[in-house]
Length: 256
Image (cartoon, rainbow, N blue to C red; front, side, top):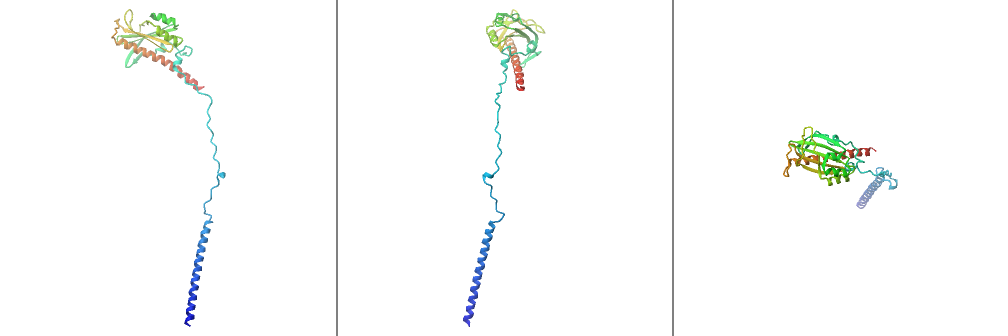
């Protein structure tokens, strides 16, 4: 009786163990199935299309450039070096328009001006020969004063820069001083300071001295400075003439 009872208990325990193991296996199968099914979910990432199916980027146009070259801007020196290009109005009024000039804080009042096509009549000595030999077409003069010192500058005009340079090199004389408009006669029959230079087709000469008629000595600085100042002013006025014409030509060139 006891043996049957014990055997029955062992059978029940074995049945429970087998059932538990089966239940555990079932759970494992369910979990595995869930994991596999999870891999088939609609939430999985969509794969990218292959490179052949990606939309192509639009083609960028290649830059193009005109075959027409832009000409260089006109040079001011070209306009004042030859009469064929130097067409701006030329007179004492256009060359020396200001009634006063300041050079490094030194103020000069303008006096008389004059212009003549008889170049030799506006100069003295062998300067007249140099101007005529190189076919001077005009001499424009203007006088300036500061204190007891006066200066006359004479601008000799030629057709080309070559002739102007030769005239300056051959010059041996002076421009005649020009009195009037508050400036008395000066630098006549007395020693004065002379300068000569050229730019483009213009050669320019100065004579400077004392309005009192006193001779200018080698140690003098006033007459020397006055002559240099007015020569520098004349140079700048001729350069301005070239720059104005070059600027106008550049504007017309860009408009076309």
